[in-house]
Image 1: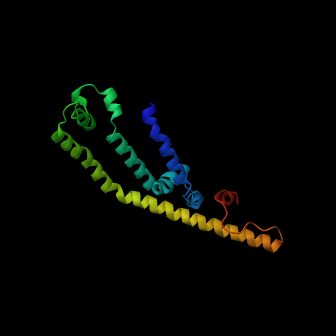
Image 2: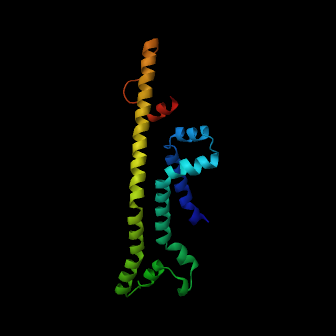
Image 3: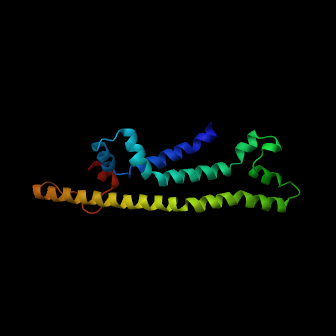
Length: 173
C-alpha cells in the first residue's frame, strides 16, 4: 500500500498548485449563468486541468512501466514476468547475455518514447500555461500594490516599502 500511494502526495501538490492558477472568475461566471457545481467542475475547471492531468498520467505510466521492485517481490513464476525482470535475469554473476539485454532494452524504451511523443505537446502546454498565469498574477499583485501605495500617499499614511514586495505580503493584500 505504501508503494502505490507514494505518488498520490506528489499528484495532490501538483494539482493544488495548478488549481490555484485557475481564475475564480470563470467558475463564478458559470455559477451566475446557472451551472451546478459538478457542471462547473467538468465543463470549466477540469478542461483547464488537462495539461497537469496528462503530466501526471505520464509520471504514473513511466513509474509503473519502469517498476522493478514490485514485480520482483510478487511475481515468482516466469510466465507472469515483466520486461524489467527479464532484463535483470539476463545479468549473471559471471556472464551477461548482452544480445538479450539489448533487445529487451529496445522493447522497454520504445513504448515510452512513443508515449512521450504523443504527450509532449501537453507537457509544453502545461508549462507555458502555468508560467503565463504566474506572470499575470505577479503583474496583478504589483498593480494592486502600486494602487495601495498611491492610496496611502494620498491619505498621508505611512508609505509601503518600495520595490518588489515579498509574495507573502502580496497574498495578504
